[in-house]
Amino acid sequence: MRAPNHRAETPSAALSARATLATLTAAVGTSGLAAAAAEPGLLAAVDQHAAGVRDSLHGDHRPLTVAALAGYAEGVRAAALEHGWRPPAGPVDWAQPDWALTRLLAVCLLARSLDPRDLA
Image (cartoon, rainbow, N blue to C red; front, side):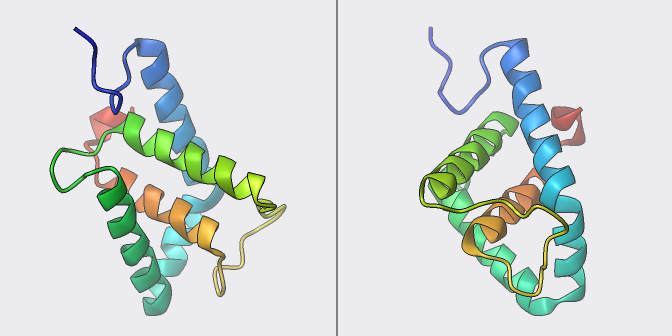
């Protein structure tokens, strides 16, 4: 029986998914979520993007997983890069983040809602 494609099938895949989310959190999540906590407009934008991510992953019908969120984040990043987006070289200016950064920050917000044992 095949595992659903939203779950990591092997321990190495699970480790890779967790590493992806840890790297994303270090790059944008920590500073972005702190900025969102201080800026209601940014928090509202991140919440809207989180709802979009949840809809894309059918998170209202089944639990979100580390593998699903990591795969989604990798897809957003790859698509953005194909369209000329470049990640910030230094600290992010959260006063006016672009769509890709806001979407990736939403993934970080959703990852925080997972069971911490899933991220360890």
